[in-house]
Image (cartoon, rainbow, N blue to C red):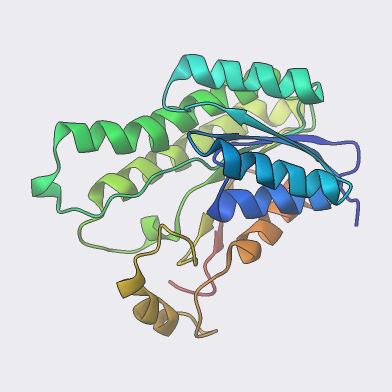
Length: 242
């Protein structure tokens, strides 16, 4: 399956979880993919090597997206490795479970610097550099449609990026660039607390939590030509959890 043959993609936070699954799915569909990692160089290089051994193209690049200068450096590195970009997936994010009254200024900076500031500057670079007809996918969470205690920082940071995407979709529409939000539900990654799993399974009509590959398949749809008439949307990929 080479529906993305000849396309280039950059995925932030692509070394684990949903980001890794998206990197592998896009590469498996024929795209040349660059992705960043913050610290785990060995794991990231192993992912890139596995894709290359399977006949794909992937490049791991170190960058901390919480720093705007590093976001620019990441895009420079991706363009140097791949050429002009067709697809950008803003996936990098962190999770914190803590009552609002107990959150510190450092907690706020930790979550918002990556989840909100990082996505903002990723979208800014994508808007400036993406080829016409491209795709931008912003990874949020189905949690912004629900009500949870102890998640104010995380959900607040994700709610903001959904608004970034809505506005950007209107700005980039004349260039035929589609901008969409993809909101996973409970997914089996290290960001899902183990004590939530049984409860999460009970909420889905499928009686299971999602796998990263479930979300990656939806990302592939949004990255390809089949989604050319879809923009400014928030696509829920949560197994029917509402």
